[in-house]
Length: 194
Image 1: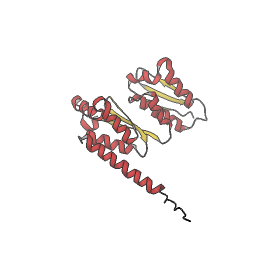
Image 2: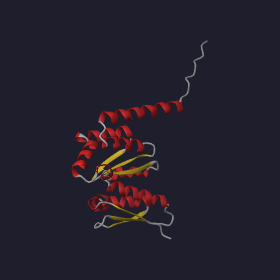
Image 3: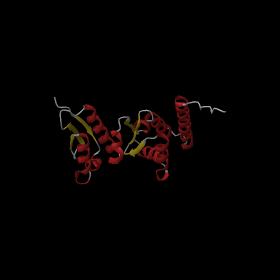
Image 4: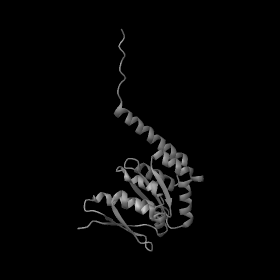
C-alpha cells in the first residue's frame, strides 16, 4: 500500500513552497526522495514517497516543512526541521483574542516588537525560530525549548510586560545552565605538591 500524507497551506504561500522555477519544491523532493503535488488553487499539498523504501517519518518531516513555509518561515528556516530533535508548534491567535482585527494586530505587534526586536529576543532566549503570519504564531525548536517559547508568547498575548517575559526567560536559562552544570560537573583535580 502506498503511503502518502497531506497538508494545506495558505494559497499566498504556495509560490514560496514551489520557489522560483520550482527550485524549492525540487530541492525538497531530491532531499527526501518524495514527490510534492501542490494545488495552487486550494493550497493542498500531497506528499508521496518516490520509492517503497522511504520511511514514513520522512513524509511527516516534509509535511512539517511544508506547514512551516505555509506559516511564514523561509524555506531555509523551515528546513531546520530536518533535524530530528526539531518540531513545529502553531498557536492560533484567534483562540486567545477572538476575531477582532484590532486585537490581533495589537498582539502581533507585541510579539514582533518595534523593528522585530521582541521576536529577535524571543528567538535568542528560547533557541526557537518564530514566525508571526496571518492569525498565527509558529515556532520551530527543540522538544525541550518549544514549551518555553510557547509560554513566553502566551505571556505576551495575555498582556505581560516585555521585561517580565525576558526576566522569566533569563531565569529559566540560568536554571537550565545550573542543572546542566550539576549534571556534568567534575570536581577539579588537586595538584600534587612535592
